[in-house]
Length: 566
Image 1 (spheres, rainbow, N blue to C red):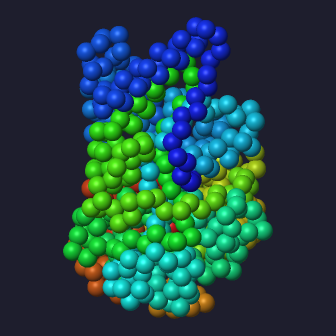
Image 2: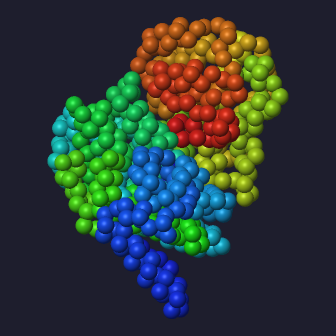
Image 3: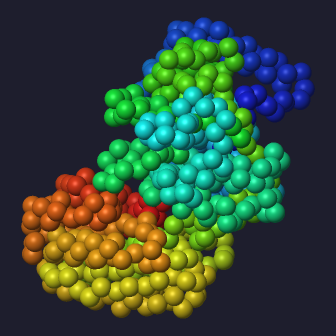
């Protein structure tokens, strides 16, 4: 999930004291320099004393595109690198609480993590070392026809305030990831807040302008829990979207692929951006993992590997002296950098205010299976998951089990929540509006009470329930509350397969006949129990959503992850 701000590479390693320790440092540095000068780690394979080891890394999901690169590292060095992919908030929770067994962390940015560790003095020495591995600024991609009309093509004077004016005039809409789930979204939130504040110093609460931010984020019409998924959804959107705030690397990849014939114009606002620097961080300093970490850092920063990263991922080199091929990059130099919040309190305030005040209201529609197979533990898991989202379940209090991820996954202020339950038929539709998002409020207590009151029926009519949900969406879209169309999504949870009511083909036909506004609402499917994976994946594909597997994690974790897409 979160947090950047470019920091130019400088290894600040702890130096052991004493003659022997100094000798160890010299030898380690010399070995690293040899690897870097050779341009790769090929020669390591010839020396059995330098081969082998493991490194377990807690990593951001965007690093999946480095799998092939890391396979080469393993073949050349014998060091096994395993990446456990997670969101930034979850990584911050686990690292600050000391509950991860990872040897290293590799997120898009460590800015938020370092703020959080600074607030936990007993964990202040958790990060033993860090090294920047690559860089990608969070920028604005604009549809070419709009960029020409706005005069933004090859215009280095465009500011975030200029973008805000186009949003306020109703001329520009955009896609952006959720700041509580994705680093690119958090970078955009912090960067825009700093730019509109006009400050070059670390953000304080007095610098934040809620009215301006509310006006700016009214232009966001598509959200997502990951930067990669956002680009796919942007291309597939049933209604046109003017642009996208995302990593430069994602926009360049999109321009080279799906939008090759009509690429987005990349705008680097003059007042600055925030850049992800992908630091690889060592979380403890035992000798075995220290050696594997140093070898990986040296290998990743070797010139030929840096060039390969740039070519395959469109992220900029972090090592000095490695030049960019000017062809894909509109701006060879990194844009100016905007300041970051001074404390985690300010960062958390921005996140909470974005969810409850700045962004468009949201409408979450949950289509929930209460067929006989949900009897017992499964039904109780569903009830407890809804209670957790309402702030009344396990981990929803103010104690040590109240994690950042749980806190920002809860139902938000101004959010409409609709529960549509089904078995062999579609049951009653329950509607709620969250005016008070504080745990224990009457609004959230009503949702918890509805969860406790879920009762079972017979049969499983998945497609009849989905048809009912989309009819409900179409009716709601025709008359949006207060004239503002909310960010609407559907979550379908089932533990079985369709055996009654509407067929898959009949649902698909009715879906395709919907107006664009209703068809633009995506369904996020949750595979639970004995649900058919192919069925759930097809529904997600038809509607432009995504499938989440609660069998490999938990129902609660799947629903929390989906909240980043709502």
